[in-house]
Amino acid sequence: MVVQRLKTASYNTDTGRRLFAAAAEASRISGWAAFGDSGNTGVAERHYLAALRAAASADDHVVTANTLSFWAMLRYSANDPADALQLVDAAHHHARKTGSARMTAMLHARASRAHAKAGNQQASRRAETAAFTTYDHARPSGDEPPCVYWVDRDELHGWAATNALDLNNPRRALAQHTAIAAAHQAGLYDDQAQPRTTALRLNRQADAHLALGDIDAAVHAADQAVQILGGVPSSRGTALLTGLKTKLATHQGVPAVRDFLDSTR
Image (tube, rainbow, N blue to C red; front, side, top):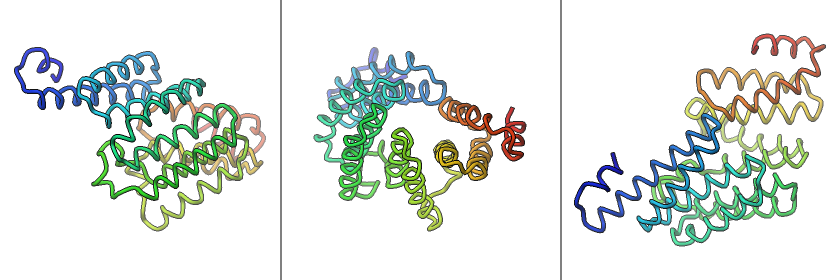
């Protein structure tokens, strides 16, 4: 619909920029759906490229930085941390022009994930610290770009926990999850509002418990993840659960593990 308007309608410069920005955001969302829900990286990257072209026509630094951020996540998830870091660097150039602390904190967190994927603990921790420090200056979500409404301390702790797992530090991963749990107990987070995110975190908690040899705790977290994920389709969630089940399968002599594997066939 937006492209049809761009091709056939008459509009002034301001309206044209808004239309290109809308087209860019629609492409970015389509890219996220292709990658996050379907695991189709090729389609996702074509959408991200289209989003960047439209965002450039709109001269929209928010959409550009956000698109580059999501593309970076795709690249480090595909085990290409070097390319991800290049995308993050490009995103920072645009983020500085937005004045958004949440956007900048998110980009530091993306960099921390890429460094962790590359096995660079020092660089990952440095980027984590930058993310938390920058977030301290974030304005209320209503005063920041709408696309970063979801960036909060829970997300930063979640990224830090995943970094710790990638860097073979399961105790630190669980400590980061404990920080998230404290916010949940205080009523600051609704598990049911974001089931996929919650299920992904529980999967990673289970992985950390398993790495520490606490099989009962691992099964408990994995079972919670399955219940919360329920009918929410997600290639990322499915891939994590499949990997966890493979690890649990080496402990089939434990009744709780055997029951869990039987119930999730």
